[in-house]
Amino acid sequence: MPLALKRNQANYDTAADALLSILTFKERLWILDGDQEFWPGLHALTTEGFCHTFYTMGEVPRLKIPGVRLSDGPRGYEALEERVGRAIGRECKALGANQFGGICINLPRHPSWGRIQETYGEDPIILGKMATAVTKGVQENVMGCLKHLALNSMENARFKVDVQVDDDVLHEVYLPHFRHVVEQGIASVMSAYNSVRGQFAGQSRELLMDILRDRWGFKGFVVEDFLFGFRDVALSLKNGLDLEAPFRQQRAQHLEAALINGDVSQSDVDRAGRAILRSLIENEVLRGDSKPTKDIIFYGEHRSLARESATRSMVLLKNDAVNGRPLLPLGSDLSRVAVVGWQADSKNTGGKGSSHVRCPEVISPFQGIKEALPHAEVVVESSNDISKVKRAAASADAVVMVVGYDFHDEGEYTAPAFNATPALRHVIPPDDDSKEARSVIERLMNPAPKKGERGKDNYGFGTGGTVIVEEWKDLPSAIIFGWYSGCEGGCALADLLLGKVNFSGRIPFCIPTCEEHLPKADNDAEAIKYDRWYGHCSIGFKFQLHFP
Image 1 (spheres, rainbow, N blue to C red):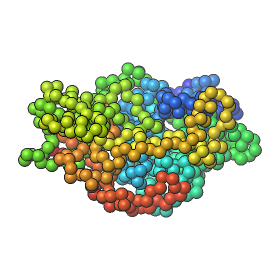
Image 2 (cartoon, rainbow, N blue to C red; image 1 turned 90 degrees about the vertical axis):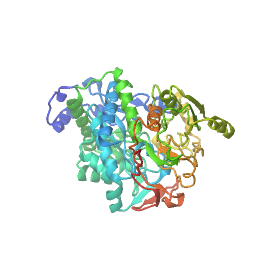
Image 3 (cartoon, helix red, strand yellow; image 1 turned 90 degrees about the horizontal axis):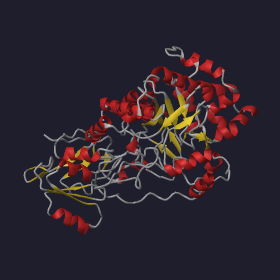
Image 4 (cartoon, rainbow, N blue to C red; image 1 turned 180 degrees about the vertical axis):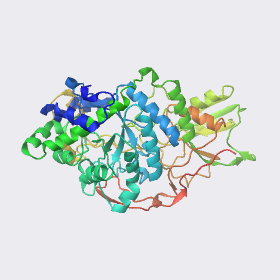
């Protein structure tokens, strides 16, 4: 790092100005977008998946400026969530990243959003407190990134929809949790794909300058949501988007010309560069001595934390009496247990977009229960063949049915088809006739397949958001919401079923009585109005059961 990053440097602004002054013209533009060329980068992203490694944006080797090194991904109670954040930050740092981009706190307006598993629920206060806790833990080692500012909760329409919202609803429902985390010192913020009140969020002066910086006092930098976060290079820079992510894309093509033509000014370039450099300087001063090594990744302490987090998050929704006593906890003297349902032996950790978790090992429900009952016969039937399920269950002392959703049913709508969203075509660089470009274009020129219909009426273990239970909740004697419970989810489920740990999780949103009680949703909408009040519930917010 250059001399400007000397330890104990008190004035980050002065240091950033000094560093900015020794950058060349080309370097000042270079630090405002990703370092990897577009087509090779997008080819790797669409074939290997999101965040196979971190993304470097703005590295200047001449001056030993590391650039922003973003590792994306998903991440309770506040103290527990701070510990989770600390583990995430340590693993990010050990892998070479200096920014964690997984602090998602968009408020779920409707369960069809698909990414509710990435956030904390539907209450702004809880969203703000939990995000602050995870940020505190993460930022012991790397910069945190809060996303997506703002009103990003319509997945399939997110690249085109314009959200209209009244001022009171915006600031009292959809923004207070963002403000809380910003005021507690988050290092960076990611803009949203959608448009807000007629302007795309990644080039909205109202959101990125007037509210975020002028009203809330944000001192960090704003990073674009990957690839499609703005439409106008000049507007994005002038209106407060500092860093284009994650590749050399629109700014690499057009920013220098925009500067020469007067569409943007040198002060616009320097404002964004200063925000990025200031954050990198602050990061080095506050966290430069933290040097975790790769042997802490997925090691015992972090796995134990994953198990604790899964256990404390699961919710007991129902526990009726069977033969005069509540069904749960199950007795440890069981001789035969059947684990059935299509997720019985599934290693289901949720979405395949930016929240894709690549665990070296995932314990399925069947594995966890079998390990917890070494003296019992534990059988599994994960097919949808009813006759086979009945045979497996017929002679069992207890039957655990594990069903729900997976990435076919919900998750991130990762790559829009350019034919289906023609307005996005101009934001990508011209085809350079490389094999990477041809591969990407061939796959993305056709509309994306619709999400599968499987699991709509199932009750079960694996889900990220609301599941309507009214039609079938009287059938089983006990119901557990287990969410996407991570690498130790199977062990956590077994701990709860057998009463080794008591239930403590609460429902983080209301469960509606029927679909008609949800707000209107159109996944292909180009315009929508967000209101304050909506819905009626069958099971209330923060509902909880536990063992006596």
